[in-house]
Image (cartoon, rainbow, N blue to C red; front, top):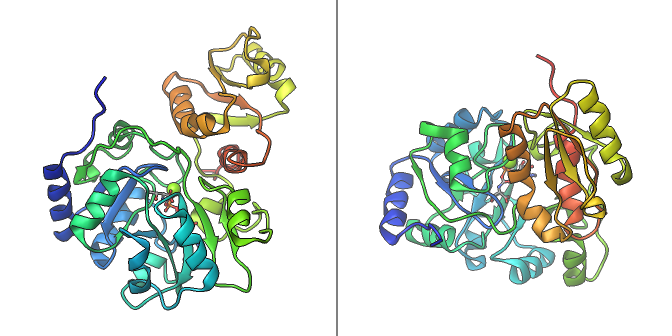
Length: 328
Ligand code: TXA
Ligand code: MG
């Protein structure tokens, strides 16, 4: 099947929508983003309305290349320079001191700003035709599962977005790794598509393991990246027994069957075979959660992968998908 992707005229149209203060959904290598002109406070505010996201939660400014970084921040510390040179374009976001060009609407009032250069041809083409920065959170409603296809975006946001750029399914599948380089030592605020091991190899020193206790920004909220179904995490060897127990109690159970139990029979409403490769697991993760919702599951039983490499980001998202939900 031919891969669907935006044409040059789509990209020019999208750039025009951004210039006119509109919202454009754009593909990136991680997840689809909901983009606005970073320098247009009214357009940036619309992002928060459409997502249902509290305005105090900061956004990422996407730019076309590392050479533009100085235009958006006050200074670029050595560690930031090294990481940008090594990982951009790519699934890494750097938090730096906010430059005058960035409105406070985009940073949730913070004096720091998150910046990244996405590694997707459609996103890069849009950024270079548009010329400015594009603030873009993941193109989902606040708290729910991030979209990894253009169809997911349409299902999630419908007419609330002015234009959707097609770019095929996202290659990485989990969001960018966020590294704060404003402090004494760089710190990972959110694990993601660039692994901690790869960051450490470039910096030459160890980084702190992210903690779930910092409730500071939405990606750090205990319940996030969550499907409608309740998510229950158990040890890998207990997944099948737990799923069958819940099925026996009348739940419509979706199972994330660990690769270690690949061919085991399991009585459940829907079963997803977890890929053995962490990269394939990350790429499929949000699609699996969406699929189990679409199949009508009310409970998902899963286990955490080993928390190394991309497993760290996968485990982080599963924990948050399983986190306590706000009571209504
Ligand atoms: O892969 C990604 O990063 C995707 C694609 C679209 O680029 N974007 C994304 O955006 O995940 P969003 O808004 O869903 O998550 C961005 C996160 C926020 O949750 C917040 O945790 C963090 O970036 N963030 C943004 N600005 C920050 C700042 N100044 N200080 C600390 N964290 C910040
Ligand atoms: Mg998000």
